[in-house]
Length: 109
Image 1 (cartoon, rainbow, N blue to C red):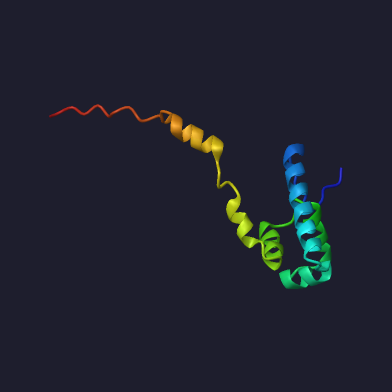
Image 2: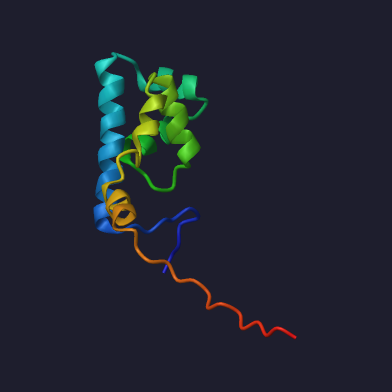
C-alpha cells in the first residue's frame, strides 16, 4: 500500500464539511471576479495549493486557508468558528460534577 506524504484521514462527515468550506471559498473568489492566479499571488501560495484549498483538502495547513481568506477579505469569518458552542453551553449549564480528589486524611499530632 502506498502512503501519501501528507495523507490525512477524516471521517466522511468531517471531509464533507471541509469540502463545503473549499467550495465556499471558491464561490467567494468567483463572486468577487478574482482569478485564481491573483488570489494565489496575494496569499503567497501556488495556484495548485489554491486548487487544493478550494477542493477542501485536509493536507493544506490551516494557515494557508487563513491566507486565502485574508486575500478575499474574509479572515474575520474564522472568528465565527465555535462561537456558538451549543453543546458546550448545555454542558456548562448542567454544571456537571467534576471529580475531585478525596480529602487527605490529616491526623493532628
